[in-house]
Length: 202
Image (tube, rainbow, N blue to C red; front, side, top):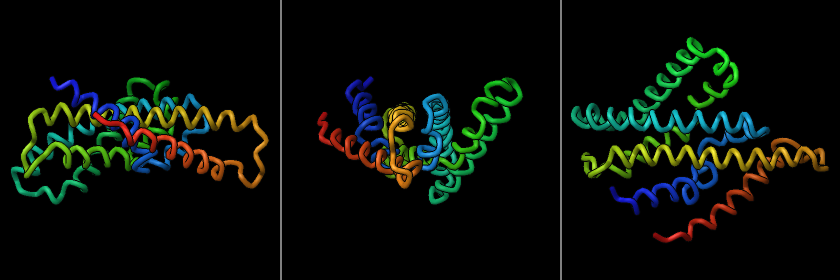
C-alpha cells in the first residue's frame, strides 16, 4: 500500500483541490444548506456516502462497459444517469426502512442529485487513474479514496461556512448585505484562505 500516495490524495482533495473552495463545484447546496451547522453536517455526510458509492459504481461501469464497447465518449451522460438513479434508490430505501432519517434529511437527498461535485469527482477519477483506456495499478482503490476525501473536503467547507454564518446572525450586518451577499463574501475569503494550501509539497 502506497501510504505517500494515500496522504497526497487526502491532503489534495480536502485542502488543496477542495471541490467547493478551489474548483467551485457544488456551490448551490453549499450556500443553501450552510445556514445552520446541523443540516450542514447531515448534508456533508450524505455527500461523502454518495460520492464514495458513485465512484465505485462509475469506475466499474467505465472499466467493464464503456471501455470494452468503445463508447467512452458517453461517460458524462452515463455518470449523470448512474448518480441520479443511485440517489433515488437511496431515497426510496431510507424512506422505506427509516422514516425518521428520511424526514431529517428532507430536501438534502434530492439536492445531491443536482450536486455537480459528485459528477466532478467521478470524471476526475477517470482522468487521473486511467491511462490510454487502461486503469493504472490500484486504480479502483485510489478512485474510491479520492471520492471519499473529496466528500470530507465538502463536509469541512460546509462546517466552517455554517459556523461563520451562525455567528453572523448575532452580528450587526447591514440590511443590504444580509443573506446571500455576505455569504458570497465569506465564501470568497474562505477560498482565498484555502489557496494557501496550494504551496504544499510532497
